[in-house]
Amino acid sequence: MPNDEPVRAECLVATADMLQQLHLSEQDSQPFARLGDLAAVLVVVTLCLLGMFATPVRAAQTLDVRDGDTTISRISVRDQTRLRVDRGRVLDVIGDVFDAQKSPAGRIAVLKDDVDGEVYLKPVPPASMRGMDGSLPPGPLAGPLPPIKLDVKTDRGTVGLLLQPADVVGDTVTLRINGGEQRRAALASEPRGKSHPHVRGAKALTLAMAAPALAGEIPSQRLPGAGQELALWREARFVLQARFEAPGLVGESYELTNVSGEPMVIDERELFRPGVVSVSVRDLQLPPGASTPVWIVRQAGEDG
Image 1 (cartoon, one colour):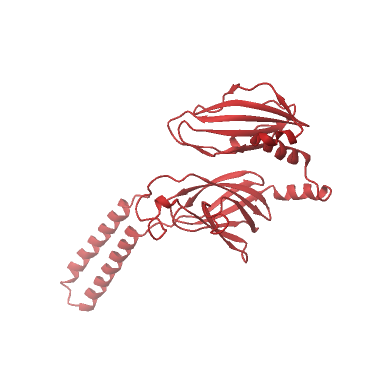
Image 2 (cartoon, rainbow, N blue to C red; image 1 turned 60 degrees about the vertical axis):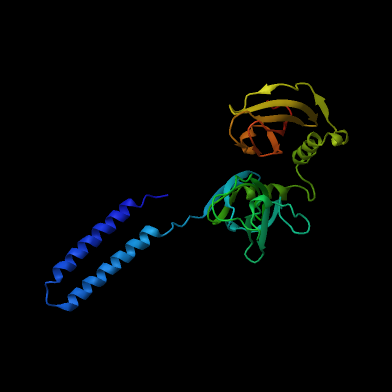
């Protein structure tokens, strides 16, 4: 928060100077001059008070993100946050969305504005943090809220949003999506109804690793290498649990453990390397000592 001491000092100096001038004008026989000086002093005092106590307005956020990538942003836990797309429209929001009938345990409420192609987001805090009327009580939050992962589908591409609820003023978040034009051009050149084989294969292989009961339905072969620990971050322990091979792809299942004394927020983009097709993390926030599975699919022949 900016320091307002210089502003306060300047206001006091200006006010004192004008009061001195007003005192000198008392010896003047012109009463209208004294009234004019008094009015000027009142104006200066009013402007000082407005400058000292006005709350600064937070600027809107503009997030540059490539089609298919995930970006991180803060979101107000008390106010609505407007989400829009630069030169585009929001088509759908997928994730842990609150719905009174279908998903009452959803962690974020989404209000769609189909006219302008925008949405309004507001986190739904747990019942233990809400008052009798369902809203957050004034004052500091009882504790931190875990991040919320959303996939935002737009007419310029699909991006992931990792939103960290915070006790800040609601504002506008603008997504500036790059790479959507190239993706649409590539898709347009492919036969209708077909997707890239690596995309389909990566999804199937990730499903097989995440749900072993389905692995038999996926044409894959289990490879050796389990138990190998890889250097990732100083705060993390990253251990290979299993490796699978599918046509043209290799899938690796890891366990990531937070070995630090602080909560860890994971950004999937940090796990991408040359040749990696997809990265999936079950839990994007880890308390100290907690673990989460991580599934990485890479092109066959590419080293980790």
